[in-house]
Structures are given as C-alpha cells and as structure tokens.
Image (cartoon, rainbow, N blue to C red; front, side):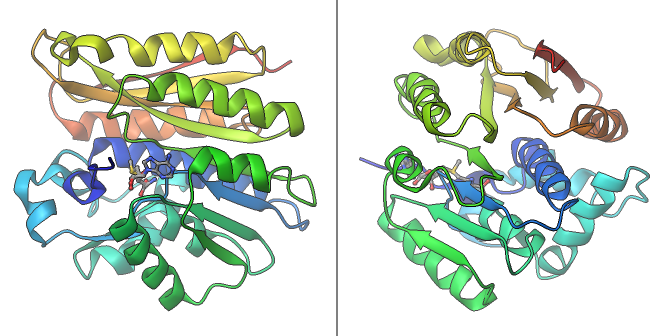
Length: 283
Ligand SMILES: C[S@@+](CC[C@H](N)C(=O)[O-])C[C@H]1O[C@@H](n2cnc3c(N)ncnc32)[C@H](O)[C@@H]1O
C-alpha cells in the first residue's frame, strides 16, 4: 500500500539538493539543439502548496528553500533554480521535480512522468495539464515498469530521475535492479538517484543508502555522489541529510554542484556540511 505523501517534505533540504542536481542535468542537455527525453520514475504530485495542512505540519521547507530563497546568489545553477522557483514561491508554492522538468525543457524535448499513488497521480495530471507544455506525458504506472517500456528514447539522449519514497527496506535494491535493467538497453542514460542519510534510529534502513551506492558504483559506469547534511549523525537523528548519485554525469556538473553546495551549506545551519565524491571517475 502506498502511504507516502511528498507534501509533508516539500522544499526541504533533500528537495533542494535533488532539484539543483536535476536542473544541472537538464541545463547540460540543453546545450545541444538535438531534442532529449526526461523520465521521472517517482513523480509525486507535481507542485505543493506550502500553506496547506501537510506542508505546515513540520514546515520542512524551513530546513531547505526558505534558508536562501531571498539571498543574493552567485552560482549560475543556483540562480537558475531560484529563477525557476520564483513564480511558484511568490504564491507560497514549491515546484516538484515534474514541474521543474516541464518548465526547464524546450517544447521539442519529451517528458515522461510516472506516479502510482491514485490521489498523487490525479493532482499531477491536473497540474501538468494546466501548464500546457508540449510533449509532456503523465503515466499512472510503476516507475520501473515504465522505464523498461519507454527506454531507450529516440533520439538516444536524455536523463532519468529516480526518487522513491524508500518506505520499505527492499526499495534500495529495486533502484539497483531498475538501473541495471535500463543500462542493458540504454548505456548512455544519465541517471540521478536521490537517497536519504539515516541514523541508527532507522533500524534496518540504517546504512541501506550507503550499500546501495556501493552496488551502483560496482556497475562500473562513471558516477559521483553529492551529499548535504543538516545535522550531526547521532544515534537518534533520523534523516540527518541526503544525497544524489549521478551516473554518466554531464561534463562539469560535479564542479557546478560543488560550487553551489559551498554557497548554500553555510546558510543551512551551524551543523550543516556537504561533500562531493567521485565513485568511478570519468576518463
Ligand atoms: C519522494 S516522492 C517524489 C517526489 C518528486 N520526485 C519530487 O522531487 O517532487 C515519491 C513518489 O513515488 C510514488 N511511488 C511510490 N512507489 C512508486 C512506484 N513503484 N512507481 C511510481 N511511483 C511510485 C509515491 O506515491 C510518491 O508520490
């Protein structure tokens, strides 16, 4: 049964690192005229009202976007992200990954959004419909099954965002299997995987992201991971940070992301820290 609802977490520190990285990937694809295809295997509701009961329950956006939404920023990628978010934030909304993709892509680029939760799917479908962006497709289907059915794209350029809720411990292995299956048909796929960093309190899930990253590195594809932590990893910290692992990353995304993390981390609180590490170097 699907119970996760992203509205409780919209705009938090995890959304910030994930959406900055995803936008960096899209920006790099846009450097060539040739169209590309974007896939979002776990799309969510598309856009979130930061004033509704779910978002205001824990006000997680206060650990993320609220920290720097009005700052005068230097890094171009950070500037692009805030420019894209601006119109939504002015309505007290936060754009999820589907809206970021739909806004950032060109009309000729294709977008496939997969969401399984019936209520989240209905919200997503209605929101993406209102944006009226050509070549944007919303699918009520399992994200991994959708990736198997819809990849490789023609032409063979594009990227995948994999952002599961990780409610069950088995979901970490699902990510690895899903990516193995994509690479069998589409080795050039640029893939961004978001993962939580969980303290011992998470029980069986503690350490699961770290071993998932090890397994993904063992695939041998060039990849790096970038992480932001907002508190210390004490026993009962819960989710103390999160990261993105990028397979087949575009040229210079590592530097751009590192520069952005260096700019925002001091704004994320006294205990905040960030890092970027290549697992398989691109030669
Ligand atoms: C973390 S949220 C997505 C947030 C979104 N990517 C963003 O950044 O705005 C994960 C979503 O995946 C959905 N989901 C869970 N299992 C799924 C599956 N097997 N296939 C497609 N969607 C799934 C959940 O209903 C939830 O809406």
